[in-house]
Image 1: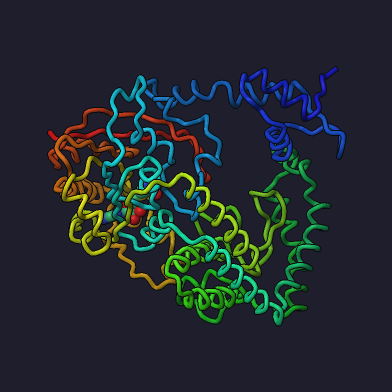
Image 2: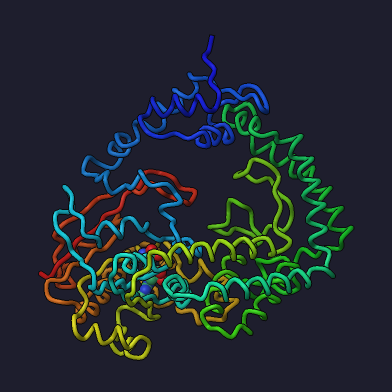
Length: 525
Ligand SMILES: C[S@@+](CC[C@H](N)C(=O)[O-])C[C@H]1O[C@@H](n2cnc3c(N)ncnc32)[C@H](O)[C@@H]1O
């Protein structure tokens, strides 16, 4: 007979089997997501030892070998950071705002800090150095430089990315942030009293729960889908249609509008009218905040909130398809889900989360300078920009120059960096400079795009070199599928002296295929 284990026993058994800690919540997760079958019911849950063994044998123990088979034996597994949990790779301010294409803080630390190992045989940066990131993005380098007692200068062509970066490294009066956010929340609640969207949502949630409990019992439904006992697509479509009748009735009852009158801007197209009204309401309150730092961080909270409240499905948050304004079958959750009808929950949740993250970072922060400048790194005059915006750092730069670069440039034809935050550009009215982005998605990966990419990145390196100290070190992280970096090095008067090939495991997007990137170490030719 099959050996049955309780969740606790399963966690103990799996920890011994794999020689690493497997918690009871890891086991519950496997059950919840239909990876292994649940035996018994509430209060008395068991799993089969055989099922666990089968799962772990095919998934975990051979991960490194499998990846090496696909990507080559020269893969540096130490740089996978596979021992880190998600909460560590998104620690403190790194998760203040979503941003597609950021690197993990541990990777930056690895190259900036003072450890050496079998791969990194030298220390490249020390406390008090200045680090440059000419493709600053969401500011990962700035934050890690701060933690390590280093100064850092970031540059990004996108004004919103610079706002995210600067918001992360700014020091706040957290009490003021807390009180101001609380006041906004209570005004928003007052605003909602006369409206019926919360009530509508409550009733809708009730109906949804009844419907989902019957038609998508958890975790049995997901398990059946995995085992091919249910055709998810067909079944989902049919149930989606069934529930739409209930949804439409409620929409009529509460007289909820599902579309705005105009479709001229991102905010017009991607938000339900009820949500749009709340966004405008909160934004007006934020505009009136007097303390500029509090205003900055609460703008980031609002932006994060409205990103989560776009009228789209849970699985398409990263890549928008078409606005979804009704209930729908959600592949991610394996049940019928609904769009949002109020921003209140997210606003409150993100406010709390932001304050928690900022105070965590406060405990680690060092007394050093960081700033992200808005500019085109091919041409920006770093010194005069700094003299304007951060004179103390300009003074340091003149004295000691920049020790080196740590950066992940955009790659050719992968991401449109302005477009990914279209909602924020629309709301804050920042000027978009899409045409200055190097290698944007909209220009493709053709020959011309690749040549202009080589030129662009080389110009950035040549422009940056003016500010670098003698014997500088440059580290660039890229998945160089077209082998463009040898030409880039050549054009910039640099030589590639080492390449670290790392597996990228922590992929958040839907595409989870094996993927590696190279950290190029460059020096003066
Ligand atoms: C791969 S991302 C960097 C992500 C960053 N390492 C992080 O962890 O958030 C590349 C960044 O380069 C910026 N960029 C593109 N062209 C640029 C240019 N000409 N000058 C400055 N920044 C540019 C993009 O806006 C984008 O934020």
